Image (cartoon, rainbow, N blue to C red; front, side, top):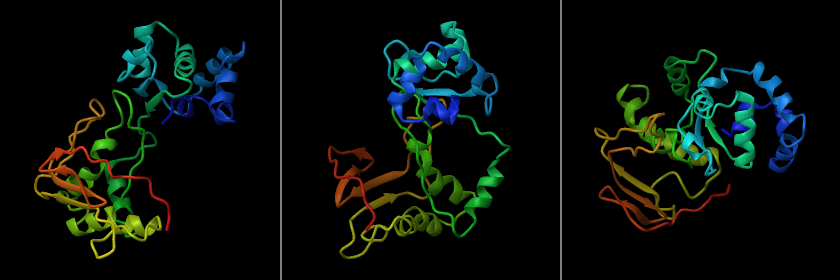
Length: 234
């Protein structure tokens, strides 16, 4: 998420980036932030910086806020304000799980027939969330081999069910007049490699990937083609 969304209350972010920056530049802003971080929703010290688009603070990518305080000698509130100002609120951070969620909870949700595969996130910076390169390989590899989904179910939930949910009429199945989005992979070898320490590690086991009929991955190697585009409902 964005650091400001994690570390500041909703009212501090009202009006968007420019309004937030204006508030943070006000004389009493740091005192307010100090009060906010004294009673956080969860342990801010464990929040890890994924992307810090600032020459001064970019070396902090991959550090937790606790580690960044030690490195910079700043208090937590001053560190948060300085990061948000230096990056015009664009500091990306990874928040730890909280609330007692477990793998068992995730698997219970996945076994519900209404479950649809998907992912989100911000994949820029030196230490992005591992879901960026690992999410779908984890569906097709880990969860299939663990018996949470069958292979056929995983493929369906990552394609057809997603297309139906989002109203994409020409995607999701291999058929005449449908967009030629095709992935060829080895079910026995597909595996995610990304971790929170290395969120850019590429998955393995994918052989070919075609997007709109053009090969973007061929024999495991990236091509120069860039046929992808944003999709709208319909």
